[in-house]
Length: 221
Image (cartoon, rainbow, N blue to C red; front, side):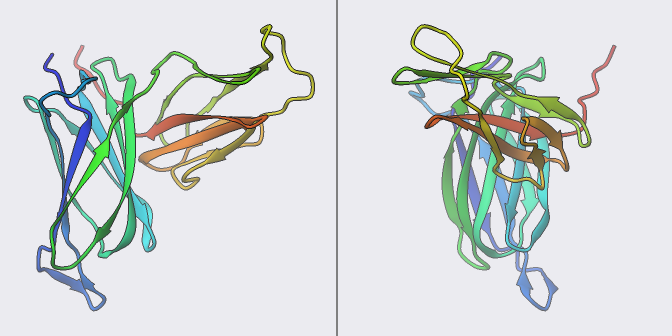
């Protein structure tokens, strides 16, 4: 397995093809490529990308395999400001190993390069966050769902001695409920293909759980 880097290079440029009276639809090319000196490279197999923002419903989604040491995706994105580009990287076992996001303004003429730091995630391991005498543990540390599937988050809130804190109740919020929603009890449901995150908070401590919603990957027997 080749070593992949932690940076996504976004190249946005207008294609010059008018498809509506409102303006142009540029081509947004996404390239995850190796960077010399990257301190924490990822052994990625697949990258999922979703783009959301005003006027984009449902989110634009693409799932792409690595070729050599890079994965290239060509997605068509409407012109506009504050397009949220969310990225999830998977290993050969379909386990989520890295995620990141960035805002990009997509213009009808100029090109722009936007780096997105892809941070390692815990995969099937729980997330453990400590602040003072409070420890917040969220399991699983990331999720991969198919549209319509649901999976519950397990949350424990303990003190400095590892004992449950009486009366502590976590709260849950999805960064993009249109991609994956979450109930007050921590049940996450995949809605449409895309990449988002669920934030769990309790007693001033927060944990971010990356969520990728995509169709199951079919493998040869």
